[in-house]
Amino acid sequence: HRGMQTPAALLRARLTPDNPAIAMSAHNPLSAKLAAEAGFGAIWGSGFELSAAHAVPDASILSWETHLAAMRAMVEVQDAPVVADIDTGSGNAVSVAYLVPRYAAAGVAAVVMEDKTFPKDSSLRVGGRQELVPVEEFQGKVEAARVAGGPLVIARTEALIAGLGQDEALRRGIAYAEAGADAVLIHSKQKTPDEIITFCQSWPGQVPLVLVPTSYPQLSFGDIAALGKVGLIICGNHAIRAAVAAMRDTFGRILAEGGIAGVESRIASVRDIFALQGDDHMRDLEQRFLR
Ligand code: SPV
Ligand code: MG
Image 1 (cartoon, rainbow, N blue to C red):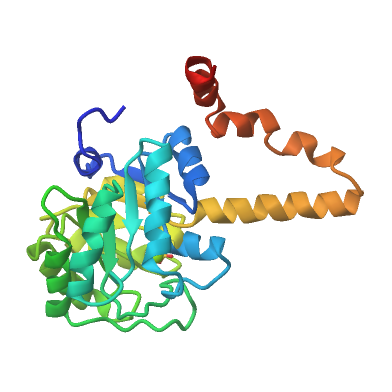
Image 2 (cartoon, rainbow, N blue to C red):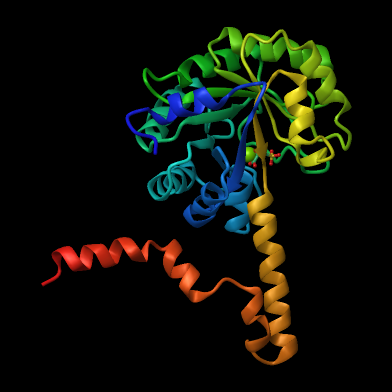
């Protein structure tokens, strides 16, 4: 139980480079609850997953209000700290100054903000639009994101994604830490971990790094811990991909088999779903208050 500790303090205590926290993505409160139940140390409030759950591209199509409502709902149903993916912060530093307090009020533990221009495009999209804002401008956005007693600010550089090279990625990471970021997310879409390993080895280490190893899954959590620089590992999209694979399989079987009997043992029971809905709690309320 989180007790009196704020979500930010709880997450900060878990950002230990010798034993990084592992965050699992979520696209709704149920997936957040399942991730917490599985034992993940944090929930990744992924823009990619939420967009996919709405069947739209991850390109600033959904409003920030939709994302914020999803984060609040995730916080309400489980106790793991929620790391909110605020993309570009929906505009400039002034937008960020209005946005982050709303996320703070929703109870998130951290916001992750990336140095792309608004509207963003997905980092993982082949041929995606990857234009970055100037370093000084993003430093202003990091400063604007810092709310007294509020969420941790994780500054994310897309320099490697944009093909700008190691020196630019390092320059940006260091500048963002100097602007007050609590951690720096370095993203890569290379299919091997080489450029990420190089970056981690050169990182001076004033704040912990955050990795999203979607494109280089061969780098295990143990390998990442051995680098000694990474405080948080984000499994970026595994909840929505698991959900899509499971639904496709079940839907296909039901039509192919001409009935629902064949999938019964392959899917969660109705009883299991009642438990996830918090039925015990409602029974308790009924006992105490209904008369
Ligand atoms: C997300 O999950 O929304 C992310 C990670 O930001 S990525 O999709 O790899 O950009
Ligand atoms: Mg995102």
